[in-house]
Image (cartoon, rainbow, N blue to C red; front, top):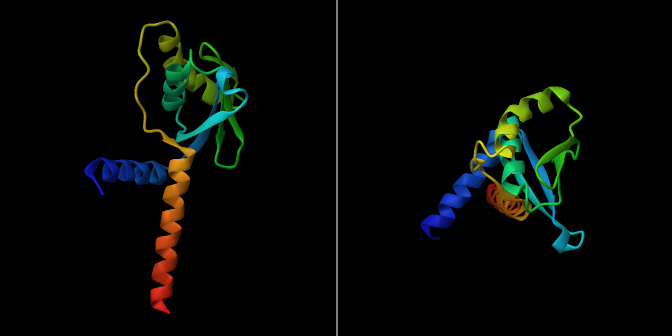
Length: 136
C-alpha cells in the first residue's frame, strides 16, 4: 500500500470519527438525473464551502444527515433554497455570501464519496468479524 492510499484511508477514518457526518447529493444536468453522493462533516462553514465549490457545476445539491433528514438544498449558482433549520441557515449565510459575491474563494474541506466510505465500513466490518472468529 503506497503512502498516498494510507493518507487517504487516514483522512477517511478522521472524517468518520468527527461526527455530524452527512450526505450531499450533487445533481448535474449532463448526468441525466443521476447524482453523485459525497460525505462530509455538516457544519455551516463546510456546507457553505461545498455549495460554493459546486455553485456553477451542479444544478442542484441536496444535503441530508445520515438518516436522510433534509439539512438544506441549493440550486445552480449556489443559492440556498430550502433549509428547514433556520438557525443553521443563519449560520451558513455569513460563510456563503462572500463566496457568492466573489469576495472569497470556497475553502477545501474533507470530502469522501459515498463509495469510499462504504468500502471503508465494509473493510472495518470484515476486520471485526475476522477478529471475532479468531476468538472462538
